[in-house]
Length: 178
Ligand code: FES
Image (tube, rainbow, N blue to C red):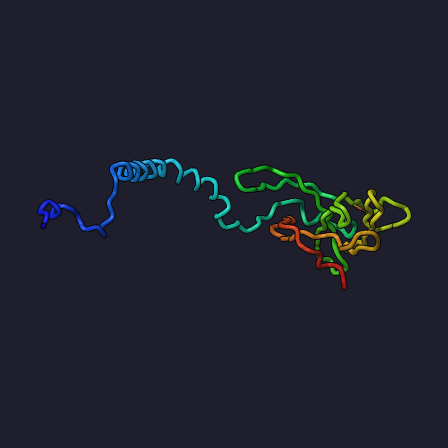
């Protein structure tokens, strides 16, 4: 016998969604939408410094060009650093001098052995050389490593403008004749 009540049933292939599922989907979606408001700016704040293109290294005015001689002299100067979200002023030091062609160049005082600070002409065993007191590395006036250190002293980018010496970023030594 045929049962007419079966006409009201939905086809078996159609997926039913319970009231509980409907509520959890609806509330979950609404919650996610509402949370996105405050979270997106926070995520942007967190990654923003990483995504920003690195600015060109800026030069800092250090000393009058006329004061630079063939004898290395140490000069201290401040640079403004931005490291992610942290900005600070850092004091750097450079040995600035003229080479045999009268060109001005500037060496980093950071020893290439383990990072102590070198000085010019301070040890009588190594006259007219940069000397590191930590493990006795020494370098020529061009920064060439003579003993202990595995590499020459780094040098700064130099720019001369309106009679002043400006220093930029530190780069590998280009004054050492290989
Ligand atoms: S750190 Fe300069 S010699 Fe070791």
